[in-house]
Amino acid sequence: MIALLLRDLRLAVRAGGGFGLGLAFFLIVIILVPFGVGPQVDLLTRIAPGILWVASLLAALLSLDRIFALDFEDGSLGLLATSPLPLEGAALMKALAHWITTGLPLTIVAPALGFLLSLASEAYSYLLLSLLLGTPALSMIGTFGAALTVGLRRGGLLLSLLVLPLYVPTLIFGAEAVRRGADGLDATGALILLGMITAGCFALLPFATAATLRMNLR
Amino acid sequence: MLRVTDVTCARGGIPVLSEVSFDVAAGQALVLRGPNGIGKTTLLRTLAGLQPALAGVVDADADDLAYASHADGIKTALSVTENLKFWADIYGNPVPDTIWEAFDLADLQDRIAGTLSAGQKRRLGLARLGVIGRKILFLDEPTVSLDGFSVKLFAKWLQNTHLAGGGIAVIATHIDLGIEAPELDLTPFKADLDIGGGTDEAFL
Image (cartoon, rainbow over all chains, first blue to last red; front, side, top):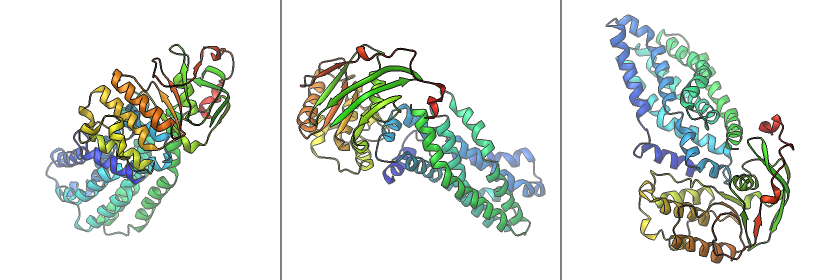
């Protein structure tokens, strides 16, 4: 399983792997918002948690269709399916590799971008914590979506339509945690729910992903 | 030992071959023949466990099976060594030193797989079979885009290393590999269109 994770990470950082694309997209979206909204610090402070979370969703979405599509095209997905590695494990490793290449870098740079949106100073720790808890769910749900659309020729757009609604609970509780942190309220409840969504995704979706892949490989 | 009994297999819900039966003993190969579209690939995918059979039994240990398709599963951004090492790791084996000579890859070890020619890629794809250490190989047109020399090289590896070590190979091919193997013509097993394959098949 580790071999698959290492290979995916290596592929991501090699030429054409797309590592950093999601991160660059995240940066640009966040930088565009103050231009669009104008120099109203109060307004920016108020919408910053939501903007940061929505931009994270979109950035995570960007590289989803590559998770299985490339392996499907060059035949390695079929070979993996007949290998001793269970497809459930492969799905988990794919999600983990996606998180390490998108979710984790997003989480790390998010506080710096929060500064651009003049996020309330109390909210930074909540922003970091909520992204750390929430972004793994984005990768796992996205991996499931990628498995659903793996054989389709223009699957990328369909994938976005399938996956974005599933991101809603993570978005709600993630942004809520940051907002409560910014307002000086107790955000524990939102963070616990966010963690539970992620835990639930990782408990169930590898199996759903593997079953979907088996069907699509026929 | 591989025993296939009355296997019926379908492609896209339509049965293509029905009641295929054969035995292959350890150290033996079997060559599947038949015109395009008869269902050689479908049969191999079914035997390898990538799709369920509509009927029949494949009697073999699932941990012995390996499948090689038209596509090689090569990552063009990785080097030749990294590609082989990956598959060796997935199967929990070391990469045997003899593999480089056996598939004439010694000079290409550090090359990025994307810069290889079609034939060289194919040799790399076939070399994967040598590192995974599986006993029963299902090979779908293994010699596509190989030149005469490479075909001989592959046949030599198959005969002297794989089969001599008690392995089994079921090969769908149109050319003469030059190995001692019985042939099975699939034409008599062509399925009648009215059997099997309901709409529930997708959920089996």
